[in-house]
Amino acid sequence: MYFPTTQWSLLAHASLNGETAARNGLEELCRRYWLPLQQFIRSRGYSEVEAQDLTQEFLLHLLEHSTLEKADRLKGRFRSFLLGALVRFLSDEYDRRNAQKRGYHVPHLSVEEHEGELPASSQADAISFDREWALVILENALRSLHAELEASGRTEQFAVLRRFLPGSLEAPTYEVAAEQLGLSLGAFKSELHRLRLQLRALVREEVATTVAVPHEVDDEMEYLQRVLMDKGNDFRASTKPSPPIS
Image 1 (cartoon, rainbow, N blue to C red):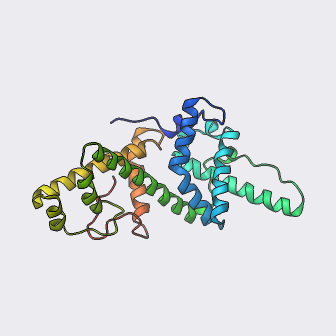
Image 2: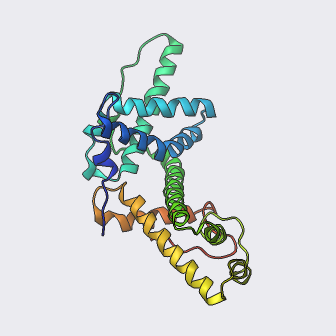
Image 3: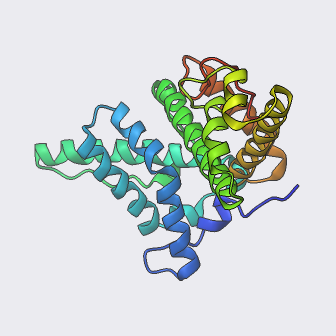
């Protein structure tokens, strides 16, 4: 299986004044994981504006303290490392704000000293973070799928078939959709099956960029599918069951 460069290796040398590859890595980090980070911060009681500011401060903090370079990718998945670092950053930020109110200084707590640890009280929030992370993975895969079909002149077909993929709120019957595309029912089912397989492959590529070694991909996909299906219909088709992402 093709195994792309992981986020670990892509971001390990990222810095504010880094070379082009490092800066691109930073931009990719922001693009992919801004929303899960911001949503997690919101879940801790911050306003939307505060969460946006703290998300940016956290990403800059990682670079300023070379946390990404010091992290050991063999200790776990990039998702777990990033969440552990964020929890420590928010704890430090909370102490700093309280210290300012009281007029004294609290020593800085470097997030890399506690990389991989997560307070027990935040486990429920961690599941929420993982669900947002999974949604980003799936949305990135769907965006790639759309681009591939658009490039092959199948935009109209995708508009119909997309309604049977995860994330769609409503879907017509197979018969209606087949008629819309001018296909027989059997041909429509075959097209939908191929599209789902194509999406699954793209999801695997997305997941592969966030784990340390190839054999972790299947476990991560199974876990992300589980947190998506737990407590909700965040990313499932409403009238037709969606295939698992694994």
